[in-house]
Image (tube, rainbow, N blue to C red; front, side):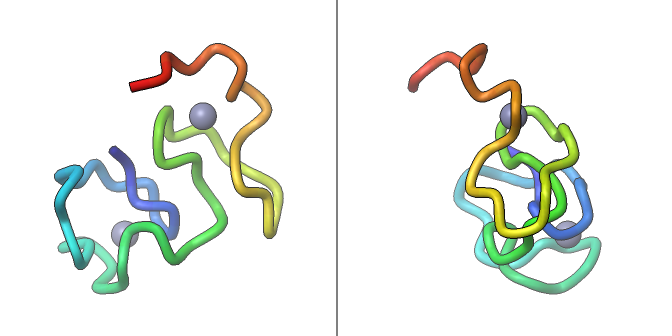
Length: 54
Ligand SMILES: [Zn+2]
Ligand SMILES: [Zn+2]
């Protein structure tokens, strides 16, 4: 997945993003799934419909 704060690619199990030092799911700038930029406070990106459900 991608860090939601900085867009860095991180392990799915990562607790802290090595690039920016915050929990990868704590941000709201990038989609964790496809790295697309998201609107502030958006849970998912506008491309969410194209995401494969894992
Ligand atoms: Zn980060
Ligand atoms: Zn996405």
